[in-house]
Image (tube, rainbow, N blue to C red; front, side, top):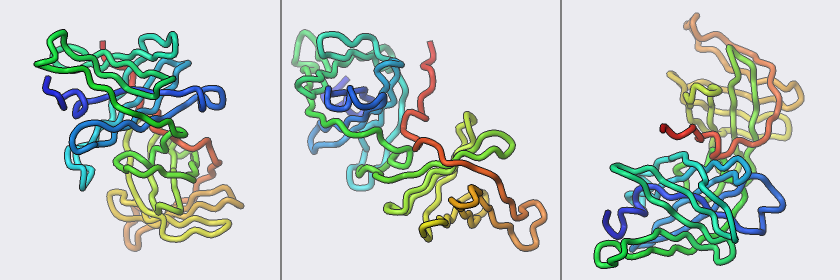
Length: 241
């Protein structure tokens, strides 16, 4: 694997004492390569799980970012070790809580691949809306509805982004916030066809407007409730053995 190959593939977790005592979930932002490219990890040390967001192939457009889930091997003496499964084998990485660095071990002969050490910063858990986005989504809200199974809407008025998820099926649709007031947030969701969606805090409902002349897409009102903001850990899937 080349010098930048490890960074361009998939990286893992990081953590520092600052958030460790205050929250169960953490995210980290690290940078490496020339030019420097950011990559992110969101992890749960207690559950020994992590979701890693790869660095972009194109730093200008953020093209080529993917999310991968892995597990923590050990967390001792201020260092967290985890493994990335890559073809044809694996890469063991180490995050140092005290130094706030991510280490990509090299070969014994550094001519082929030297050890890489990247500086990192710890942040609150990254919102699920932050996937493919460099800047964090700061004030998202999530809503859970029971509509032929659990579904979620996550929205953020500042970034004007929105996401619909259908439970564990993993199917999602992106959209945008078109209006936000004290009681209602209006979304334009990119379903199979664009639909207007309204979240009402006072009524605790999601209203999906119908399509004129289309009996298969009627106006639908569903009872919902606010839920903890959805984070990148929702991308976690148990690694294949």
